[in-house]
Length: 78
Image 1 (tube, rainbow, N blue to C red):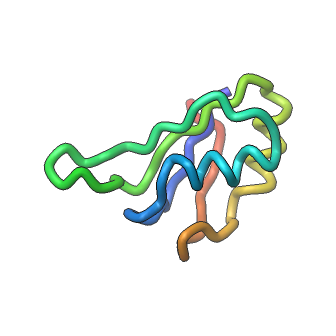
Image 2 (spheres, rainbow, N blue to C red):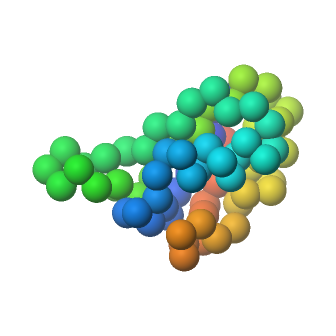
């Protein structure tokens, strides 16, 4: 399952996102969109979880939570 994570801080790392989501199931991969010129986060990314049920539970649990001072927006990616 591919999960969109928005409103990320420019200081948020893939490792911190993985740590947060792994509390709710197995995380296969985390990809944070980076700006090519500044090499800073563009403020969103994707989490890949192999089990769709764990993914849905993670979305419910993490959406609206604070990470690095920002309220996360988490939905299933289309």
